Image 1 (cartoon, rainbow, N blue to C red):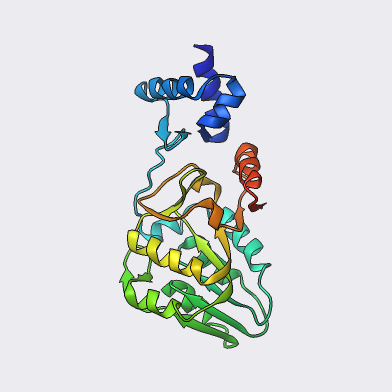
Image 2 (cartoon, one colour; image 1 turned 30 degrees about the horizontal axis):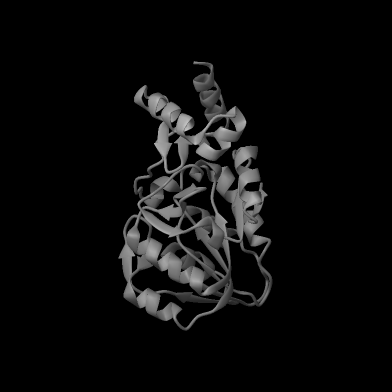
Length: 250
């Protein structure tokens, strides 16, 4: 069927599409599109998601941080440099866990005082190389796969903290469902960090879009700024901008 091929062509280009976009693009009803997606999934040609479809399996599994460090290195470094440019002397901000925010810690080159709160052991170790930086390491249970802390103690400390910006990494960004991670405990801590920050900045390489993990961190409406790489499709960029979210592509 011609319409099925059009759907696959769009998906091949954008990696992720949603039902409403396909309805407008192909001038058919949502019921028709959902039936099309079901048939294409039955043939093994795509993966259906909440409100759309992905060309790759959208459900992410937990992977050790030493594995994640070896992929999309150039993209992560570009994202990290763009994020570091948002930081000024005397700023107070938070950095969550993950390899992209770990790259941010390495990219920060402010010659002056900074106040930084982090849930990541690796981020803390990197930032402590500069004696002008005051680093608060959240306490709690340490996750082996991410070298980050979670749990009651970390959440408790955040009750008394307010800062300007939060830089956060994610395992998946579904435009309808929101930002997700592979750990419920880490998702809960990230939610608390969002509540303690005036602005939430998501650092995510383009492979994260159209993906979904086990624990929901937040809806896209809770995000102020997304920094990603040029692998993201223009369709997804425009949809994010239409939500009133700033997006920087590096």
